[in-house]
Image 1 (cartoon, rainbow, N blue to C red):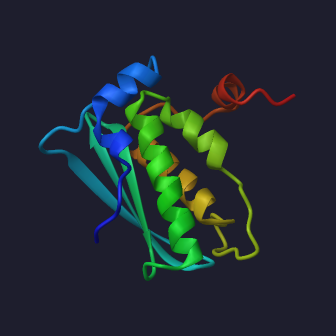
Image 2: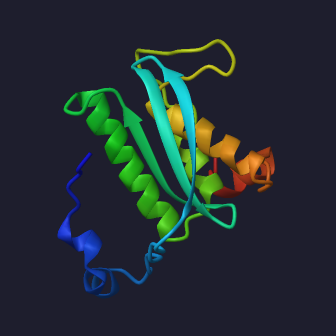
Length: 147
């Protein structure tokens, strides 16, 4: 599968001029874990690359290419990967994407409300399996100021 990447993503000079944050370089080899999640749009395969148990990139694949759901899921994956490579706490990404709802839900427990929710649930599952910190109410409050 070939995806187009804007030249700005490939050109480190763009990032250093435009943003004070530095995107971590992708190593030559990297460990990957793949999860399969049932969503209202069908089976969603989520590949999470990680370095020493810390998520580095996230690649979701949903159905055939060209559809609207596929495009939205791919864009979520690209934005999430950029956030992770810039050093954003993965728990913060989970808090932002968790419980986003669409008209198609799937599953009984845990209920998957949307493809974005599936990404959040999978990333949270990965963090727990890798022994990273649990997403407690304190952590959610730390990242998502909701009163």
